Every structure is written in structure tokens, then in C-alpha cells.
Length: 242
Image (cartoon, rainbow, N blue to C red; front, side, top):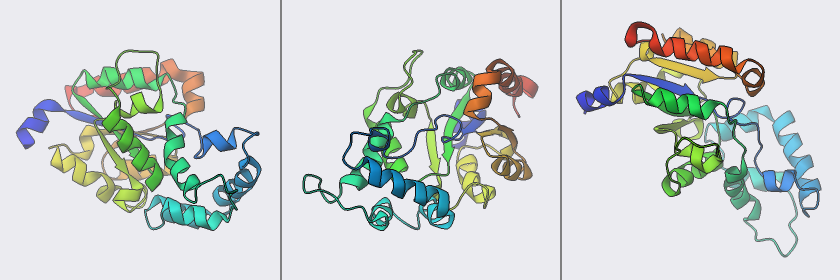
């Protein structure tokens, strides 16, 4: 298996989701629709959750708490027309509506043509993981196109590492978070590049022997050519390692 995988991939780019590929929130169809009956109550509850309950959110990202438990904790009373699991289901279904940065996927596609694996590595929740797996199973693979939806982007990734299934955040133990995937594909941290919006994640990844670049949606909008040139350079140097 190792020889097969080494022939298939000689490097890997681990790419983050929130802050790098998208900024859109959960429950987007409700939070961005002022006419929705639950807009006001969910907006207030979501703001409180994500701005004032860091420990709870981290537990959710680690997989210690489920989306259903989070929804129960929001204590939002549903009108009779809504099923009891409405907000839990929407936490998964609305991921399909997340808008994706149109600049980065073509670069990642080009990297794949050089024998580089593209792996989503995200500190994220069970509902997001369920949504990304569902999209990967039902969508056609992303081709050279201007369409960069959640579903088509999901098919770009060669694999997915999510904190809710890894049971840890990237920065907490990058050795454990990434090492199993790397070793199972006959790769090492020296073969890996992480693209992440948080410097704390980048620093932790570098400490393991990997290469990391801190990039954000904003930096991509303002300095895309410079960033892409740097990534391209790192792909080419030494023909093998980052």
C-alpha cells in the first residue's frame, strides 16, 4: 500500500475551511433571512454561543458535544410547523449553502496535477463533517470551472480530517492530528504544507517539522498573486519536500 500511495502522492497540502475557504456560518438560510420566523431568536442565540461560550464551542469541535445537544442548549421554542429536529437538520443541510472563495480551488486543483494530495484539515463540528461527507458521496468531482459551491469543492479534497472525529483541535496535538494520515500514505511532515488562517495552528504545525502559511480570505483578496506564487514556489523546491 505504501508504494502505491507514494507513487500517487509525493506531497500533501492540508487546507483549513473556515477563514480560508469560507466565512459563512451554520444555519445560513435562517441567519441571513430576516423574514424567517426563527431569524431573530436564532441570531441572538448563535451570537451568544459563538461569542461568549468558547469552551462549549471547543467541546463541540472536539466531538465531545453533538449538534443536537447544542441545539437543545439554545432553548429556541419552535412553532408547530417546524419538526423538533429542524435546527439540527439545518445545521447539516445549510452547509451546502456556504459560499466558497473562488480563488483558491483552482490553485489546489493545479497542485493535484503535480502529485500533491489536497486534504481538508479543519477544526469543525459533527454537522459540518456530516455535510462534507454527504457532499463527497453525491457530487461530481470538481473540474476546471467557475462554479465553486460547497458540494463541488467537497469533491476537490482527496481526504478530510475534522477535529470532531479526530477528537482534538489541530493546535492541541498536531502530531496525533496529522501523523496517522501521513504515515498511512508513506509521507512525513516534511512533505506537508498547511494553509490556515490562525498563526497558532501554523506555529504548532511547524513545530512538528511541517511547513505552514497563514492565509485568510482577506489576504487572498488583497494579495492573491503573491500568495499563489509562494505556494507554487514551495511546491517546486527540491522536487519533493516543502
